[in-house]
Image (cartoon, rainbow, N blue to C red; front, side):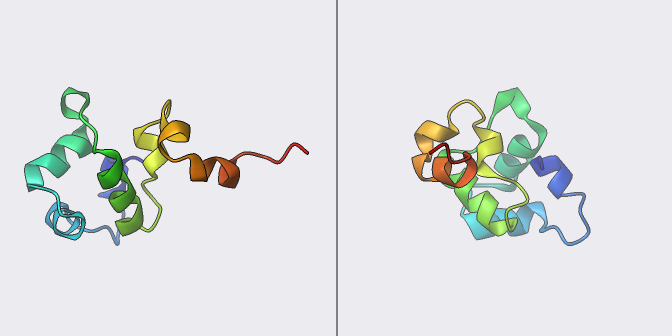
Length: 84
């Protein structure tokens, strides 16, 4: 789920609540990520925090679709089928 979709869900945190919980600098920063302003995305650390605070609805891998295996190698075993 994308961040903008998350904010439309019934039990979603508000922009301000999410900012406070993840320690982001401003509500504007959250809105820029939500809206994809100038292709901005959260740092890997913020992506993890967003995933945690949205209870897994907004996955960190979605922010880094081409890089997540390198950034979070521990997730590879969890998502890749076993070929043994």
